[in-house]
Length: 177
Image (tube, rainbow, N blue to C red):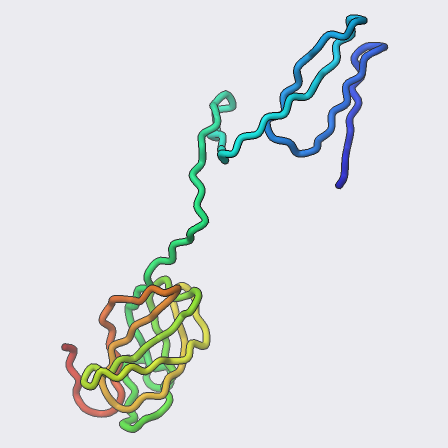
């Protein structure tokens, strides 16, 4: 620990030592000695409530600050999905089971436990993709799925998107239901 002391000379026989050691609520109160020379006795007080002083008003009093250790993760929002292998739309033209590279777009897509699920609308089968990278606005990954119509969900930090975004695989006409 680095201690830096500053000596202030107050006349020929009195000295005051100040140390910039971090303390909370230090107040110096003068006391008289029998010879009439003033000395300063430190009085230290501590508060358990974090405070913050309003800016712009040096005479303002401190205001208690609420603290919390819980971090709230917003639910992911999915706006669209595109096939990275094909024409950049929400459809892969291959009928059979194959690997699809995809990008999901929206917000709050980055965080702990990021996962993308493709749920077959007709049969209810759920497939989970591999997330390769994610940012707040885009999540990239791969998945192997058979032909069909899928609703896409993204889960981040234990929260799952509620948006109905569809991905189509194979030939045929698919209509949103």
